[in-house]
Length: 249
Image (cartoon, rainbow, N blue to C red; front, side, top):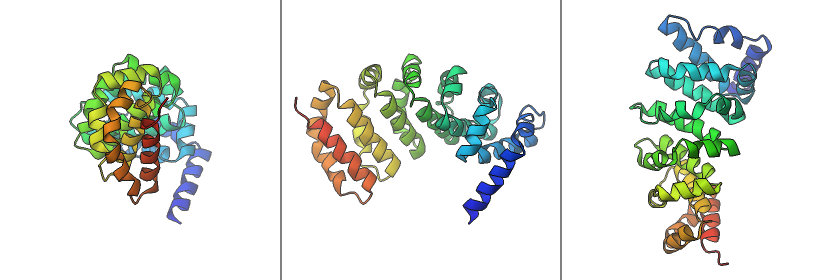
């Protein structure tokens, strides 16, 4: 009931275009005002219809320009909103050169900022142009290091971005050269569903490379231990990984 009510509320926001006047306030000189504005925009963006509306009104480039200017809490909100927008359409963010902006946030001391930035990178790396941009900006070595982050959300997102980017040959090569296999294997035993699933999927994609497959063969028993995991998503990911790693030409 609550979700239906909120959805109705969001639809009313969009129908009467409350987003535009809110967006005009992102440059307000008052910190408290901007924080409230970004909280509202973030709540709207959490609904696909809201994110689509924000993308269509050209809000993504404006938000990207504000990332580096804002204080920690507001910056995290902006990045979270951008992540929602990128998940419905990554093209405007790519056209606005979002990847370098996101890259600069990956070393931030705030876990919330790192988590939101890596979440946006997961969406950015879905289209082919995004995968190439991640490679061109030399992000994969950074993401491999982030597989050891203290925040599980950051780790899951880093593994997810590696998984997406490694679909292309350049992504595979750069991930392997950055030493992705060892930390990904260490994450297979994680009890965090997103971390474990993304690690297994990333290993599956990397296993398409003969040298990676040869390295992973000795770790098949570890992967088999996940076949009895209570979550079906982990069972399927482990089964697919084992199938690809065990494949013989």
